[in-house]
Amino acid sequence: MGTGREVSVSLDGVRDKNLMQLKKLNTVLFPVRYNDKYYADAISSGEFTKLAYYSDICVGAIACRLEKKEGGAMRVYLMTLGVLAPYRGIGIGTKLLNHVLDMCSKQNMSEIYLHVQTNNEDAIKFCKKFGFEITDTIQDYYINIEPRDCYVVSKSFAQSEANK
Image (cartoon, rainbow, N blue to C red; front, side, top):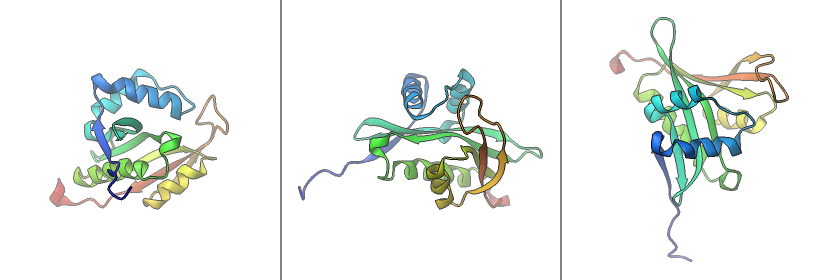
């Protein structure tokens, strides 16, 4: 198999014509159902929401919402990041998150943050590899899943006047 073709992972933007792929992934990956606002926010974030394809099969996604903080600084809320179980551990989640972190730097975002269920040790460990820190705990954040508590996990970016 020395001359075997290397399997590539490609990222593609989310838009109306492929939104159903994101919806299907979310149904499989997450214990909660997302409303229309989630999908509208994902599409309007542009380059901050991506589908991941492994050999042309949609296997993962990252979806973000852009938010304006008091004072005008922009930040990114990472709504969801997930990869189908058989495709985990081969760098797809890393590629998705690195893409968004790169976009945060290029577009001078002040921070990126997400909510992680307190028992989701894999997600916490994954985020910490990229410099995220647990900055808060919210009691009873989730309504229909146990445990109901979540951590706020965030990463700040150095702001540069040159990038504004």
